[in-house]
Image (tube, rainbow, N blue to C red; front, side, top):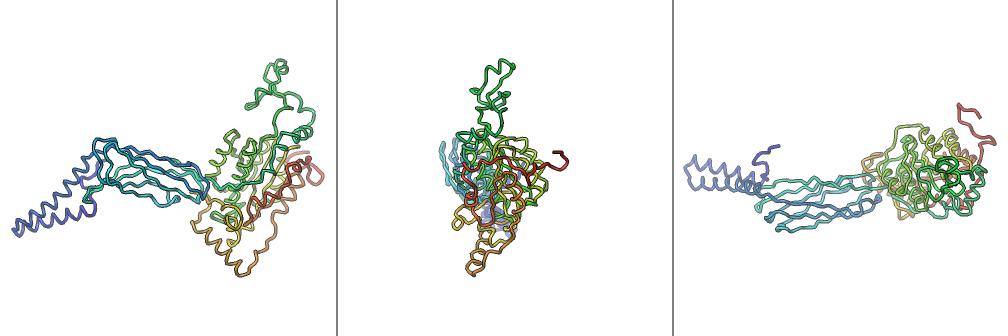
Amino acid sequence: MRTSFLAGLTTRGTSFLAAGIAAALAGYLLGERSLMCVGVALIALPLITVFATRRAHYRLTCARLISPPRIAAGGTAQVMLRLHNISRLPTGLILAEDAIPYALGTRPRYVLDKIERNGSRELTYSLRSDLRGKFEVGPLQLRVADSFGLVEIARSFSGRTQFVVTPRVYPLSRSMISRSWAGEGDGRSRLTATAGEDDVIPRSYRDGDDMRRVHWRSTARYGELMVRREEQRWRNRATLLLDSRASAHMGSGPSSSFEVAVSAAASVGVHLAQEGLSGQLVTHEGASLGSGMAFEDMLLDALAVIKPSRERDLSGGLKELRIAGAGVIIAVMGRLSESEARHLATCRNEGSQAIALLLAVNTWADPRWSSAFADSGKAGAGPSAEPGQVGPAANGHSHANGQALADQAIANGERRPERPDETIPAATVLRAAGWHVIRLEAGTPLATSWQQLPRAAEMLVPAATLGGHEYVEPGQTA
């Protein structure tokens, strides 16, 4: 696209040009030759400057490095920009500005006096965000200016760098989820015994099975790869269910129950990965994130951009849980009705382990106490993450304002409002089905609630029934 020759003039340059035209015209009309010469000089100066600036073809390269490229909400990353002049001429005055999203702060600006031939300059600045999400940093925009400040010509690089802000991850006790009930050690033999004699029969090879477990005699007999089922670490995987229904959560901003649930799912997922379990993330809509060696990275990237959903049904996620089969099931749930809890309870297979983290959503109704979860100094854990470009809309001061209200209420001697425990009906149903249930309310650190789980050796429970009878979904026959 062609631009006007005078498009690069600054306010000062335009003023010079206007004053020169006025002086030249006045000198011509009044017959004052000296005044007309001054006007012509004022006109010529910005025009010559524009021509010279446009003719100076500076060739610059730009490289951007963000370290680390992914941080948790509230963390800080360092950005390094390297400008290299590969032209034969030194540059003039350069104004550099890197484009960053509003959620990451103000745009950094730099003034570079001159970059010599084959010279380079390194520019650094920090990025910090309390908003989770995936952001694009860049492009770097340059404005080439003359020494008089009469002309500025804007140029821009095309390179952009992705920057990921994940939910906050809280350390959890390693004694709660252990390989002793995930399919290894002494616990593995106990779990295998509950599955019956069929477990010692070789089964067909599946993608991901260790080739060292191939049963060659059975392979020759059946004409296909068979593996020894009794030696498989078939319990050494976990399925993580996150309830992201907007209707199942309350509050807004970093202290909303939805953001707490996302942070809790991230913390549990990282804990599972560090314990050596292969994981799978399932949402209530049924979308799943496959397991693998990079599950931790895939999980955090997915949770960085997850949004509250308008769906009200859990059927999609429950279907994925049943497909996942045996293994550890951990469900991070918002508001859960008794009927929904019954459907969730049936997803636990015989011999498998299941944990439900139920959020007492009604405790997020009072901003004086819901924001206390985000206070790292008083709660003993870092604040939860606010969604970047996703989730409920809230300004950056919501956490500070809510915490100030909580501090004022405590100073005034007010007690935390007592609310009925809405998680009791769902917890009762799940416990009757052999689930381990922990409750999380606003203002309670996740690590504290996680301590409600029994020791790993006590996590092994027999298959349970609801009310003494196996639970059957509506529309099915027992």
